[in-house]
Image (cartoon, rainbow, N blue to C red; front, side, top):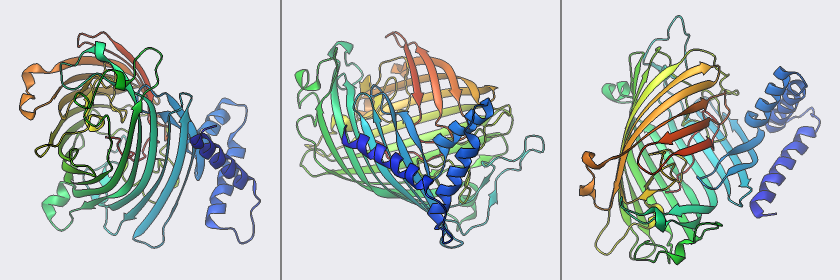
Length: 471
């Protein structure tokens, strides 16, 4: 059994052992949490359909211990393991939460991490839109300007990542696979700008991050695709022979205003500096990410990501001890997104291929783009992506969605232009069930290279925060 599998099994056994311990008169806070979870599972796990549903919900979203599951990076399979999490409020203005998890796939890929959130909440709620009297309030209608400090360490090992070469003209026939190990340790801050009235109306925040990143690239494992070292060299895959450590900084601004009951924005402008331990791999990346969310009925869909949670939490607000319930309300939304990434280097420097963004299928973080193409199909330092997504509820947690993508990668920033975008269209089903990781089943076509069917499950609970990216 691999090291990560032993970690996951040990965590699960430890949690089950603690759950079996009797309560004492001087019961600690953590022991009380385990006792309550044990009592909840004993009440929920039975033979009726309602009891089975409640039992599964408790096993997957329970606190402080639950089963961890989700899809790792594309081509690396479905992962299963264990997660632990708890929270504590030492005073009225700070709330602390932390969690840890470890998962493993049948294909020998794995991930393990530990996460901590420090949330400062001294400010009153700022009401951005009044709740509807017919639909009731949602947690997205009132925004509290939290200061959020995140600390984390995460290790990921992937057995198979496709590489076709660099640029928009790479050939499918050149496909090769590599394995990747990535370790990140660091932290980030989201600080709201509260001292200026226009900034409060725009829900404006300053964001910053500071990370140490360590990479190891090796030949991948595949029965039908050759390893990367047999088809590419350092000249065609920068960074293939040597992977230095990186000291990575980032800063930016984010605004997330809600305009009336139907329209919301999620804008991010940021930059990252990757300072390598060698003499030829340092670079800077700029990111412009413009999201526009239009809700059809004036109610927000359940939040996929909440910055106040760790990836293993699904609480609806700081201090809540339960995930959002499964919604049966009618809901629908249109999301319009523009993503622009560009990288710059000094003379003699190159962006390592394993840190360059990709289009096609899903990227290494599981985010879909041009989904009719193979995963990781196009790779380059510069990227432009336009996405239009419509999602509407069908029954209970099940929804239908339709997505159109237009995108391009380029070796030079000036080669990105709207006249040469590749286009795809995709349709599928989504399942957003309480705090369960979001499920997506999709079929995509267009683009001239056939179609692509995908089944993915989020690596975080629905309502949990994003994990540190692998690129």
